[in-house]
Image (cartoon, rainbow over all chains, first blue to last red; front, side):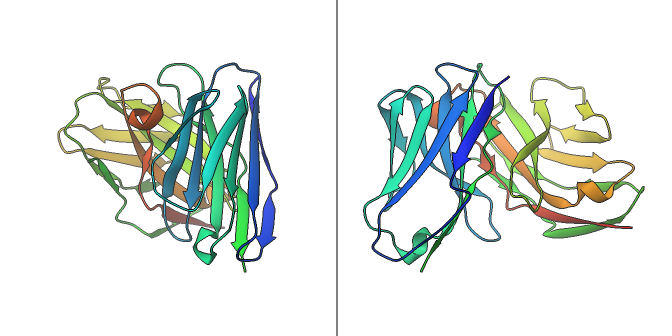
Length: 112
Length: 118
Protein backbone atom coordinates (compact mmCIF):
# COMPACT_ATOMS: atom_id res chain seq x y z
CA UNK A 1 0.00 0.00 0.00
CA UNK A 2 1.01 3.59 -0.46
CA UNK A 3 2.42 5.63 2.39
CA UNK A 4 3.70 9.16 2.73
CA UNK A 5 6.43 10.23 5.12
CA UNK A 6 7.06 13.78 6.16
CA UNK A 7 9.74 15.05 8.52
CA UNK A 8 10.54 16.57 10.87
CA UNK A 9 7.30 16.65 12.82
CA UNK A 10 8.21 19.88 14.59
CA UNK A 11 10.88 22.48 13.98
CA UNK A 12 11.91 25.70 15.69
CA UNK A 13 14.20 27.93 13.67
CA UNK A 14 15.49 31.49 14.14
CA UNK A 15 14.70 34.22 11.66
CA UNK A 16 17.21 34.21 8.81
CA UNK A 17 18.11 30.55 9.09
CA UNK A 18 17.64 28.06 6.23
CA UNK A 19 14.87 25.49 6.00
CA UNK A 20 14.55 22.04 4.52
CA UNK A 21 11.43 19.90 4.91
CA UNK A 22 11.31 16.53 3.24
CA UNK A 23 8.47 14.39 1.98
CA UNK A 24 8.68 10.93 0.44
CA UNK A 25 6.02 8.64 -0.93
CA UNK A 26 6.21 4.86 -1.04
CA UNK A 27 4.24 2.29 -3.00
CA UNK A 28 3.48 4.34 -6.06
CA UNK A 29 5.26 5.82 -9.05
CA UNK A 30 5.02 9.19 -10.78
CA UNK A 31 2.68 10.74 -8.21
CA UNK A 32 1.61 14.37 -8.29
CA UNK A 33 3.05 15.98 -5.18
CA UNK A 34 1.88 19.03 -3.29
CA UNK A 35 3.05 21.32 -0.47
CA UNK A 36 0.33 23.08 1.51
CA UNK A 37 0.57 25.53 4.40
CA UNK A 38 -2.04 25.89 7.10
CA UNK A 39 -2.00 29.08 9.12
CA UNK A 40 -3.64 29.11 12.55
CA UNK A 41 -7.44 29.08 12.29
CA UNK A 42 -7.42 28.92 8.53
CA UNK A 43 -7.75 26.36 5.79
CA UNK A 44 -4.99 25.04 3.64
CA UNK A 45 -3.18 27.11 1.07
CA UNK A 46 -1.40 25.47 -1.85
CA UNK A 47 2.25 26.50 -2.08
CA UNK A 48 3.80 24.23 -4.70
CA UNK A 49 2.89 21.27 -6.83
CA UNK A 50 4.88 18.92 -9.02
CA UNK A 51 3.80 16.57 -11.78
CA UNK A 52 7.25 15.03 -12.29
CA UNK A 53 10.96 15.12 -11.49
CA UNK A 54 12.31 18.64 -11.73
CA UNK A 55 8.85 20.06 -12.55
CA UNK A 56 7.76 22.56 -9.93
CA UNK A 57 4.96 25.08 -10.10
CA UNK A 58 4.42 27.80 -7.52
CA UNK A 59 1.01 29.09 -6.57
CA UNK A 60 1.94 31.89 -4.21
CA UNK A 61 4.95 34.24 -4.39
CA UNK A 62 6.89 33.78 -1.19
CA UNK A 63 10.12 33.19 0.59
CA UNK A 64 9.99 29.45 -0.07
CA UNK A 65 11.05 27.13 -2.88
CA UNK A 66 10.49 23.48 -3.69
CA UNK A 67 12.43 20.79 -5.48
CA UNK A 68 11.77 17.26 -6.67
CA UNK A 69 15.11 15.52 -7.10
CA UNK A 70 13.56 12.06 -7.32
CA UNK A 71 10.22 10.69 -8.44
CA UNK A 72 8.87 10.20 -4.94
CA UNK A 73 10.73 12.91 -3.07
CA UNK A 74 9.53 16.47 -2.58
CA UNK A 75 11.51 19.07 -0.64
CA UNK A 76 10.42 22.45 0.68
CA UNK A 77 13.23 24.93 1.29
CA UNK A 78 14.07 28.44 2.25
CA UNK A 79 17.41 30.28 2.29
CA UNK A 80 16.33 32.73 4.99
CA UNK A 81 13.23 32.17 7.10
CA UNK A 82 10.86 34.99 8.00
CA UNK A 83 8.57 35.17 11.02
CA UNK A 84 5.64 34.92 8.63
CA UNK A 85 6.85 31.49 7.49
CA UNK A 86 5.63 29.99 10.76
CA UNK A 87 2.80 27.52 10.27
CA UNK A 88 1.84 23.94 9.69
CA UNK A 89 3.16 22.44 6.45
CA UNK A 90 1.54 19.46 4.82
CA UNK A 91 2.80 17.34 1.96
CA UNK A 92 0.27 15.45 -0.15
CA UNK A 93 0.24 13.08 -3.08
CA UNK A 94 -2.20 11.78 -5.64
CA UNK A 95 -1.90 8.83 -7.94
CA UNK A 96 -4.66 7.98 -10.37
CA UNK A 97 -6.61 10.56 -12.30
CA UNK A 98 -8.85 12.54 -9.98
CA UNK A 99 -8.12 10.36 -7.00
CA UNK A 100 -8.26 12.12 -3.64
CA UNK A 101 -5.20 13.76 -2.16
CA UNK A 102 -3.48 11.84 0.64
CA UNK A 103 -1.69 13.90 3.24
CA UNK A 104 1.38 13.38 5.37
CA UNK A 105 1.37 14.02 9.11
CA UNK A 106 2.64 17.56 8.67
CA UNK A 107 5.46 19.68 10.08
CA UNK A 108 4.89 22.38 12.69
CA UNK A 109 7.36 25.16 11.93
CA UNK A 110 7.93 27.96 14.41
CA UNK A 111 10.20 30.80 13.37
CA UNK A 112 11.50 32.78 16.35
CA UNK B 1 -12.39 31.66 -9.00
CA UNK B 2 -13.93 28.95 -6.92
CA UNK B 3 -14.61 29.53 -3.25
CA UNK B 4 -15.68 27.29 -0.38
CA UNK B 5 -17.53 28.62 2.64
CA UNK B 6 -18.09 26.92 5.97
CA UNK B 7 -20.34 29.18 7.98
CA UNK B 8 -20.07 27.32 11.28
CA UNK B 9 -16.70 27.94 12.99
CA UNK B 10 -17.66 25.59 15.84
CA UNK B 11 -20.27 22.91 16.43
CA UNK B 12 -21.05 20.66 19.35
CA UNK B 13 -22.88 17.33 19.52
CA UNK B 14 -23.76 14.87 22.22
CA UNK B 15 -22.24 11.43 21.93
CA UNK B 16 -24.50 9.05 19.93
CA UNK B 17 -26.45 11.97 18.45
CA UNK B 18 -26.43 13.26 14.88
CA UNK B 19 -24.81 16.47 13.69
CA UNK B 20 -24.75 18.22 10.32
CA UNK B 21 -21.89 20.44 9.16
CA UNK B 22 -22.63 22.97 6.43
CA UNK B 23 -20.63 23.85 3.35
CA UNK B 24 -21.43 25.99 0.34
CA UNK B 25 -19.29 26.64 -2.68
CA UNK B 26 -19.19 28.85 -5.70
CA UNK B 27 -18.10 27.70 -9.14
CA UNK B 28 -18.97 28.14 -12.79
CA UNK B 29 -17.81 24.63 -13.64
CA UNK B 30 -20.19 21.73 -14.14
CA UNK B 31 -17.77 18.92 -13.43
CA UNK B 32 -15.93 18.81 -10.11
CA UNK B 33 -15.38 16.91 -6.91
CA UNK B 34 -16.23 17.74 -3.34
CA UNK B 35 -14.56 16.36 -0.25
CA UNK B 36 -14.80 16.39 3.49
CA UNK B 37 -11.50 16.06 5.34
CA UNK B 38 -11.08 15.53 9.06
CA UNK B 39 -8.15 16.95 11.00
CA UNK B 40 -7.91 15.58 14.57
CA UNK B 41 -5.57 17.11 17.16
CA UNK B 42 -2.75 15.04 15.66
CA UNK B 43 -3.10 17.44 12.67
CA UNK B 44 -3.10 14.73 10.02
CA UNK B 45 -5.64 15.40 7.26
CA UNK B 46 -7.84 12.37 6.78
CA UNK B 47 -10.27 11.95 3.89
CA UNK B 48 -13.78 11.34 5.22
CA UNK B 49 -15.92 11.27 2.12
CA UNK B 50 -15.89 12.24 -1.55
CA UNK B 51 -18.66 13.26 -3.96
CA UNK B 52 -18.51 13.48 -7.74
CA UNK B 53 -20.62 16.34 -9.05
CA UNK B 54 -22.02 14.28 -11.92
CA UNK B 55 -23.50 11.75 -9.50
CA UNK B 56 -26.90 12.62 -8.12
CA UNK B 57 -26.71 9.97 -5.42
CA UNK B 58 -25.33 11.23 -2.14
CA UNK B 59 -22.11 9.57 -1.00
CA UNK B 60 -22.05 7.58 2.23
CA UNK B 61 -19.25 6.07 4.28
CA UNK B 62 -20.48 4.17 7.32
CA UNK B 63 -21.71 6.83 9.78
CA UNK B 64 -20.84 9.68 7.43
CA UNK B 65 -23.11 10.86 4.65
CA UNK B 66 -23.50 13.99 2.58
CA UNK B 67 -26.42 16.02 1.30
CA UNK B 68 -25.27 17.26 -2.09
CA UNK B 69 -27.49 19.92 -3.64
CA UNK B 70 -25.81 20.86 -6.92
CA UNK B 71 -28.22 23.61 -7.93
CA UNK B 72 -27.90 25.25 -4.54
CA UNK B 73 -24.14 24.58 -4.46
CA UNK B 74 -24.45 23.05 -1.05
CA UNK B 75 -22.54 20.08 0.36
CA UNK B 76 -23.30 19.26 3.99
CA UNK B 77 -21.85 16.43 6.06
CA UNK B 78 -24.00 14.39 8.41
CA UNK B 79 -22.37 12.39 11.16
CA UNK B 80 -24.66 9.82 12.74
CA UNK B 81 -24.15 8.13 16.10
CA UNK B 82 -21.37 10.58 16.96
CA UNK B 83 -18.37 9.18 18.79
CA UNK B 84 -15.74 10.86 20.93
CA UNK B 85 -13.19 10.10 18.21
CA UNK B 86 -15.15 12.25 15.78
CA UNK B 87 -13.99 15.38 17.59
CA UNK B 88 -11.83 17.28 15.11
CA UNK B 89 -11.66 20.10 12.60
CA UNK B 90 -13.66 19.30 9.51
CA UNK B 91 -12.75 20.88 6.20
CA UNK B 92 -14.91 21.02 3.11
CA UNK B 93 -12.91 21.11 -0.14
CA UNK B 94 -13.59 21.61 -3.82
CA UNK B 95 -11.60 20.36 -6.75
CA UNK B 96 -12.01 20.90 -10.47
CA UNK B 97 -12.33 17.75 -12.55
CA UNK B 98 -9.37 18.91 -14.64
CA UNK B 99 -6.61 16.51 -13.77
CA UNK B 100 -3.53 17.33 -11.78
CA UNK B 101 -1.44 20.34 -10.92
CA UNK B 102 -3.00 23.67 -10.16
CA UNK B 103 -6.10 22.80 -12.10
CA UNK B 104 -6.57 19.97 -9.66
CA UNK B 105 -5.90 22.17 -6.68
CA UNK B 106 -8.01 21.49 -3.62
CA UNK B 107 -9.74 24.65 -2.44
CA UNK B 108 -10.52 24.44 1.25
CA UNK B 109 -13.02 26.13 3.48
CA UNK B 110 -11.82 27.53 6.79
CA UNK B 111 -13.10 24.58 8.74
CA UNK B 112 -15.59 23.72 11.45
CA UNK B 113 -14.38 22.60 14.86
CA UNK B 114 -16.57 19.76 16.10
CA UNK B 115 -16.72 18.92 19.78
CA UNK B 116 -18.33 15.71 21.01
CA UNK B 117 -19.73 15.70 24.54
CA UNK B 118 -19.80 12.42 26.48
